[in-house]
Every structure is written in C-alpha cells, then in structure tokens.
Length: 506
Image (cartoon, rainbow, N blue to C red; front, side):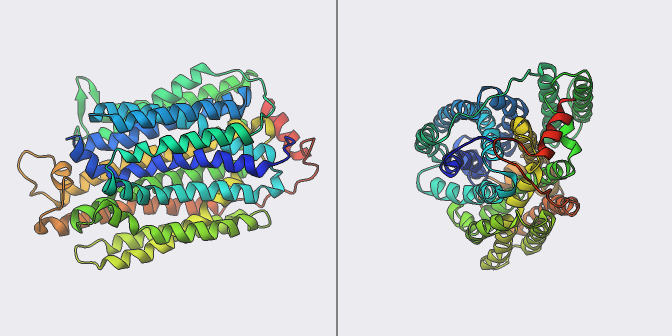
C-alpha cells in the first residue's frame, strides 16, 4: 500500500471531477426534448448524444486503467480532466446535432481517462479492511450523480437553456484541477506493456454491437446498406468480442500482458461484482428516459418540474450512503447489495404501474424514495466487494475492468431502451401523423390528449426492461462470498494479495 499521510483530502479532490463526469451520463436525458427542438433534430439523433458519450467512455477504460498504473493515476486524471472540460465548452457551443455528438465523444474520452484513476487510488491508499468508508464515498458519489444529473439538468435547461448543462462543467473542471494538483500525491508507477490488438478488437466489437442495437428500429431490423444488415452488425460485434476474449487468454498463456487480465476473474467476488455492476449500469441509464418523456409529453411538466420528482431519491440516497459505507467492512456485502437491488427493481415496477394519463403526480414521489434507499445499498457494497482483494499492482487494471463493465451496461441500456421505446410507440400509437416517424411525432412537445393513454402504456412497458435487468443483478449479488480477513497491509501487501498478484503474473 502507498504511504499517504492524508488519504481523505486526496480522495475528496478526485471525487469532485468524478462526480462531474458521472453527472454527464444522465444530465442529458432531461434536456433531450429541448435539444431536439433547439437543434431541429429527431429522437434517434438525440439519443446518440448520450450513446456517443457512453461509447467513447466505455471503450478506452481498460487501456486508461493500465495507463494509470504505468504513468501514475494523478497524471492521467489531470490530462483527462483538461480534455473533458474543453470538450464540455465545445458541447455548449455546438450549432448542430452532428457537432454536439462529436463533442460528446471527445468528452467521453476525457471521462475514460479520469474514471479508473479514482478507484485505483482508493485501492492503493486505503487498506482492504478499512476501505469500506472510502468505497462508500465513491459509491455514494456514483449514485448521487445519477440522481442529481436530471435535477440539475432540469434547472439549467429551464433557467438558462440546454447549452448550460455543458457550460457548468467548465468552472467545476477548473476547481477540480486545482484540488487534484494540490492534494493528490504521485503514486508509485508499474511498468506495463500495452495490448494494441486487444484495444482494436474491443473497440470494433463494442461499436458494431451498440450501433446495431441502437439503429435497429431505424432500419426496421433489416438492411442498413447493401449487404450490411442490422443483425449482421450485432452478430459480427459479438463474434469480435469473443475473439477479443480468446486473444486475451492466448496472450496471458504466452506470458504476455493482456488488456483484460483474465486472472482477475479467478476471484469470485470480482467476477460476480462485474456482472452485478453491468446490470446496474444498464438500469440507471435506461430507466430515466421513458419516465422523463412521460412527465414532459403526457403530463406537460417542465424539465425542472419533472426532475424535482427525483428529489426524494437524491436526499435519501445521500443520507443513507455514509452509514452503509461504515458497515460494509464488517458484514457480507451480499446482504446489502441484494437488498438494494431488489428495492430498485421494486421501485421500477412500481413506477411502471403508475404510468397512466391520470395518475396524481405526487404518487411518483413514493417509488422515488424507494429508489433512494436502493441506491444507498447498491453502489458502495458492490464496488467494495468487487475490488477488495485486488493487489496494488493490479489496481488500475481491476478498476478499468470494473468501470468498463459498468459502462458497457450503460451503453447497452441506452441503446436497448431507445429501440424498445420506438418499438412500443409503434405498437401503441399507430395513428401518428402520416409520414412522420412515431418517436419524432410523439416526443416533440405535449401530446394531444387522445394519445396520452397509448404513450403512457408504451413508456410503462419500456420500464419493465431495466426493472428485469436490475432484478437479475440482485440474483447474482446473492452469491457474493464473505470478505477475506486481511493482515499485514502496510509497507508490504498481505499474503493473500501477494498470492493473487503472483497468480495474475503467471
């Protein structure tokens, strides 16, 4: 473990920027209708404003985690912070949706450089048996960002315009840069080689898979161009990702250093935790979209009003998360995580049941409160259980894997919910204006009353998907093992960690 005199100021400094980039994962959802109107575009294009960010965020995470090990997490974090802040300015100045999508992709790249470093620092400067509170803060930050994003987005969109959901990042980025420069120490670096073939395979596979899912409805799940079909892209993406995993196995067997160290998955909790966080990423990205569109197009709420319905979620999550963080070092994380995930599933099924044209608005505050309880019990326990047994040398790689699986879930959630919404709208609103795509016709303003019931039903049906995904995550979390006891963590790594590190090098 690194000898850091003041680890908490270092962590708080990193959390400022981490909070900012995670807010950008969800802040756009509440502004989608205004962006569509302001840039004169359609729902498929505006969905890519989020998907481009998530894709550019997810693909490089494995390599940026390794780069942090090699060149120092502080250096990588600061470079990423500069890229992210400048790209945020570019987003706000964009005059058309194509430029905005390009700027969001650059933003995602900056975020990818920053994210693994935060978790890697926690792993390296806090002992495993005292990491719960620190990981609880990391988890609470992730959870709160998901909740605060739509609320902040609503206030900014209503008061200043959609551009300000991006401009607000500039002063925050400057403050974060000063804090990290001042308080985050330079940690020991480790030499690593980089798997270029693995980077290419993972990038190509993810792009084909996500593009196929995202654009499937647009091309009616048929031909894209010539011999290229939607299902051909999806299947090819899956095949390329299988080849990526096979290449990682071959490289590891030859004594090389793969981009994805498969040996990490020999730890039971690491494997289960990555599966669980993928379900979480999928759900928290997917469920806001249908609810926000329902609030604004059926109920006529402003972005601020619709976002304020999430206040119980934010307040309860923020209040409970520190207490959960103090407890997770002393108990099996399965109980906390499974409880939170089941609560989240229940909240989403509850929300789906309430989505009708005449439901009293105040009733949506109740499942929002349950989501707050759920978030407090999800992020800290899942992240702590997943990374607890990582060796310091593997901190960057493990953090990169964990954040990659979370972002893969988010990318797939964004793509899948867009396709499902389009499909359910086509089924429930067959009487859309002639010649207009259903999604575009129904999401460009408050709907005529005759369409309220059908639109509400479509949004309700769409929420069932993320609800089922998070329920699957709860089942996986039930198999978390009890945390291993730790001794001798200080100047020298504990025995179990040395053994794990040696195993990973074989």
